[in-house]
Amino acid sequence: MINLLKKLRGGTLIGLGYMLSPLSWWNDIFFNLPIALVFGYAVSWIKADWFLAGTVVGYWLSNVLGILMMQFGAVDVFMDEEKRNTRRDLLLGLGGSTLYTVVIAALVYFHVLDVPDFLMDLHP
Image 1: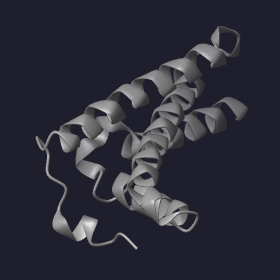
Image 2: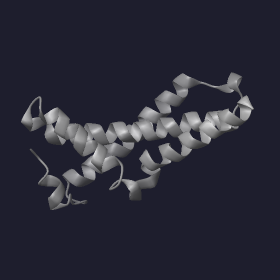
Image 3: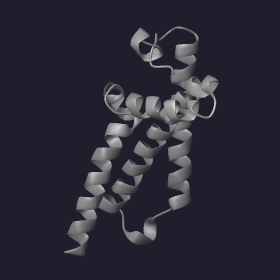
Image 4: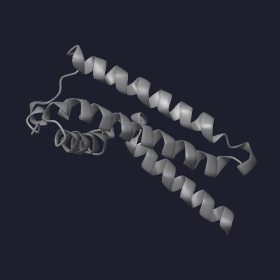
């Protein structure tokens, strides 16, 4: 019974993590961008000029959270307890999400990807 609950928890983490991760880029508009914009808006309360930087950090954090959720879920579903390496999983999640966010931010910065006008109008 405990093993079944562990696998159900792992499956749930994988599913939710997938929706937040860079692997589901098509879900950015529904999950990652709203989270990033709320984070950027909250950061802009501290200093208005920090909205864009806060949005990028929020986007990065939502991707990190998604990858880590997938990793921990996969460990619950597929691996035994003694094979876990939490530090390695954390470093892989941070590294992959950071690389993905840097690439997306660079594509926006160099105007390869355009940010829709309605997103920029959300700036406080």
